[in-house]
Image (tube, rainbow, N blue to C red):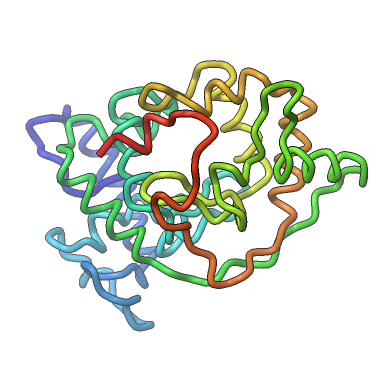
Length: 257
């Protein structure tokens, strides 16, 4: 995911493979943003992506996650733009340290220092680009209603809090480290809840999402993914302020800095 990798930390075949990915990314995404600056003007040449810029550093990220991290086009790679900085930073750490299981990400992040990853997280958190209209999931009205109820009301009988109780009334997230849930692909939402349920994704203890995922059935997960991915994003869509919600359970990611 990152362009500046110490040659000493990688084998020659791996270095060549990473170089090919980054070279292709630089050609395709020539409107990437220079370090901490607004989007580069149209017509930016690949040779302007010098290795000492943030644009070069994130070129491999945007190859999958879209220009400025606005989301991939294949329905799986999620949006990075505008997510809370600490959330993005924690995910980079989790991939690097294999608390999240996705080999391409872990492979590219191995050996990279914390400060380097924090700077990348800051960059993407500062990108604000429009959300596309949602695609209504091809499911029954009953399934959408079940997803709506879980997201907005939860299920007290099963000890399931509403998504809004942690992710905010507008589901835009909560500072410093809880992300928004709208504007995400249906497949991505379903796969990530499933990963928590199956132990393939973990967060800092106490891992509140892992506890919640264990209580969700496959039907619940499908309904939530369908309803959340079908909702429009109403601007301004930003995380709620830290401390504005009393969380229903302790979340280690909110305490981890």
